[in-house]
Length: 241
Image (cartoon, rainbow, N blue to C red):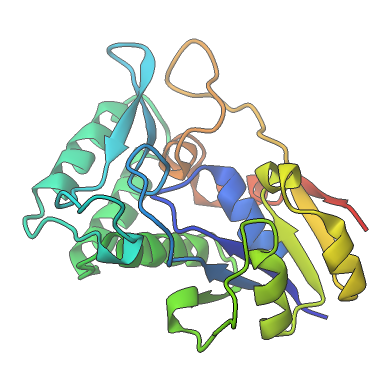
């Protein structure tokens, strides 16, 4: 039995992304898609205590060509954007209990990561955070696989076809996929299809009102490594066949 998930590589994603990682044995980054600058590919949200509202923080990327594949989105050669993120994180200082340990982890990752493209950075950061949270899921990249189709699948069947290739017995997707991924093909292929249902537990943030779905960095800053690792496990699977 092998539980499998296929997802785009996002930029410091919310905790539910890591719940999906926890729910499977093999997590593949689908890194052969068109880049969308308004998606979670290159940005996410933190909280600004001085303004008492959430805001976007971003990866430093070179301006991509129109309709560029995410593989072709390059990071800026200067590390200034990483220093900007560290400065933004600094607004949490003296306001949360796990500032020092989270900042130390992030600084070490930034120091050791030599990614030159956005998908590589997202891949490396997600794997690093997963290991930091003691998640033992196997990771791979779609671009590294020798997967060829006579005819490219559409959005509703891509996950099914890749699941067949990797020999999965179960495929688990984010909740949004329930709108377009149909169970019939999975049933015919003797594959279980499920959608993760994440429990976005309320925790003490730096603002007066809880804002669900902020970046995993906010969760780590406010809760620390051990508590966040437990929160990641708070989900159920809605099976469709």
